[in-house]
Image 1: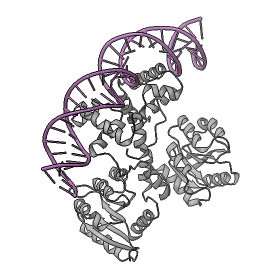
Image 2 (image 1 turned 90 degrees about the vertical axis):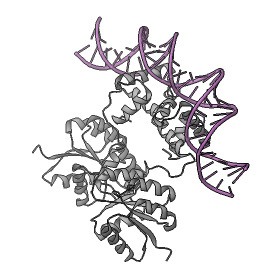
Image 3 (image 1 turned 45 degrees about the vertical axis):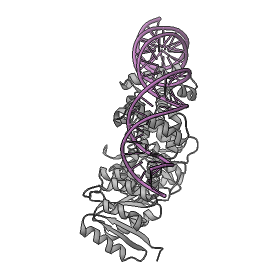
Image 4 (image 1 turned 180 degrees about the vertical axis):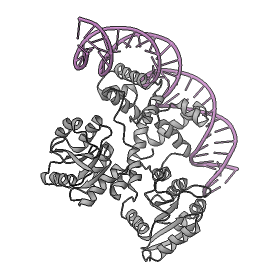
Length: 208
Length: 208
DNA sequence: GGAACCATCCCCCAATTTGGAGAAGCAGGC
DNA sequence: GCCTGCTTCTCCAAATTGGGGGATGGTTCC
């Protein structure tokens, strides 16, 4: 049946790997097309196995799962990755999502949880705990506190997009000199001396 | 009991508003401190009511819920916002999360779902459907395809952080001329002529 | 072996940007 | 009224930028 969902598993723990494989193979619509102990092995066979979904352990010997996802996404952009993590809510899971994973399950997930995660990914969802979801949205929510004025914040935002002072002046409807003046005021308040430093500080303080 | 969680509700539909209030007031650890039909009203009373959590409708008459969250976060940065949305998975919910909401429920959620959402927010989670979660992570995942070489991508990433060509040269361990050479090549491939245009194009194409 | 990239470096030039220092007009707060 | 802070503007010297070239090794592919 070519309609089966092709699944590859990358997991160094044999019990977990075989357990997942047995479960998935017992279900008609799934087909395990690859079982790998290392990321390196999975990468070379990626093209040949052509999985729709890869269950990827993060803590692998050699190349870790995060770097592996980056590599494998380059080989097949349509493939989707589900993290297999030991810890429920780790920073690593968050990093894996940034690298291109679309969800995750834990090693001791029960059958239903595993199958649910796969089904949700297939139907366009991204299964994750609410704690992970919070980490994700926190990462792009900005702070409410700022030492800068409203105008300076506007200038800073334009600066962050890579605009020069004259482009900022044009978009804000002020003269070049004024936009430069705001920039200098920003530097002073953020205690920096260059554009790069200002942007680094602003990102660190979640102003942008 | 000052230990009760103070909750404000902003919702123009009377039935929904009163229904939520009745439910929450029936529970000992919650206390409804504000019931508002409009965002404007909620904003002026924000400081006085001092809620821990605000249940915020998105589709309000006058100021919408998204703008309201932005305003109210400025008044009380510690307050947390839960969206009340009609549609399960809309673009608006995503925008609200960007504006600072930490989760959402639907108008026809049952009691358990509402209480679960509040509890999860209080315990550091961000309740949302897996579809919304997918929208969120998709927004910061980058494309796997790029017309640029590996080195050019590195240069582009540094450029995006606001570095000058000499700073890029230093961090990549090459001469200024080489980094400028890469930049020129990037411009040529992206068909642009300035740093700003290159960054716009790169963002649009999800290269960065 | 040759073609086609890639990454690295070098030169020249003019226009623009940048950072630093200083200052004027205008509002709001006490 | 005075002071502070915000927005606005001016001059200068140094650095960056974008646009022309061109050169060297190193691949990878045919």
